View (spheres, rainbow, N blue to C red):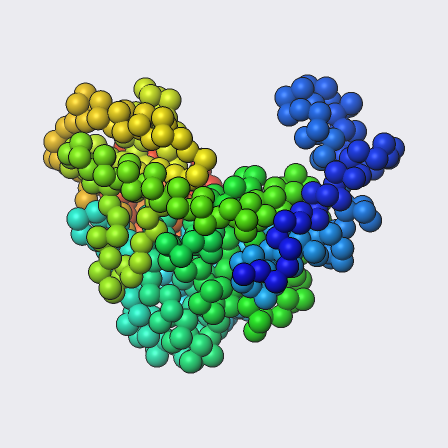
Length: 482
């Protein structure tokens, strides 16, 4: 299956050799293996702190790898079926930004769904590329955005034949996949790159029971957030590239923004997580699917909740579904998803991935135990019994079609004025507003503020969604174009 020996962990082996060699360190980090900060050592453990080192000849250099990091990248590319792979210490956000900035220069167009992660919008602000948004479909029962239809992408390509790339979510936060094979074929026929935001699809590459990953289908670049479902440390990721992408140029783009002091704790975790997936991924995904399927069945049996799955596939806006995602609609019990999220955390010591106005998402992996799945089901049963309400006054949709008036970069850097947010209807925003997680902007720079958007923001704040994006930390004021 693999060309290379996937049992190898070159970065980890090199780090262990240096850590255990007795080497005297007159380099950074300044804690000197924990001796300079004993509280840090006691909290994290001696081996962990002693493994926190900076680049040196024996450990290679993330910005210009020629030895052990280079070998780790080759192993990662082999494991994911890519031509090239880059170890990233800025999460999938840095991968998405690197993809967009590789594909597009200032003034060049990129086709993308509007329900992209904030990192894609941020990349547009940084590099000056021009978005061509394709509105995703919407599941009316759930109120959630789906994927891009092939017809929607085709229309965008026909109207913008000079676009350089198409960015696709594979999958969305909720587990929805577009018709990626057809979109790749269509884009390539028109000389456009295909960029896959697979922040929530790392596990796709290691099981035939799941939708395929972008590299397996011939996409040009993919952002894989290994820490989410791949088992590495938070903030670590892989950026994958196909044969048609110049890896030297991609590394130059990465190095525009990535730290020159990459954490070896993160790099080691990538090395070890890649090995684990390559050797055990199929069994891990089978176990994960069994757990998620069982939880879906039991939650739906409670009544009121709707743990949705592959039945939402419609062949147009949702062409595959990630069955490891435990996405649950809560509106029918009179509670917003974020309200259930808060109750689970505050009353039952259960932390979910996120809750929005109609749904919540629980991340299930092979690391979960039966006891924890049962605890979640039991808590949801109690919440329904104790806290159910009626639907009066509840919003029923997550996605609002944007009114794009300016490019994100032009709006972000324009002359601006700060207004009370409730007085901003009709103005053009210079900043984003979003609930985090998932970090998909309700409003992005360059978009006109409408009464519907303001109603949504006010409702989300009332329900307890964590709002972010604006200069004003309280989200009570917003900057608009002067």
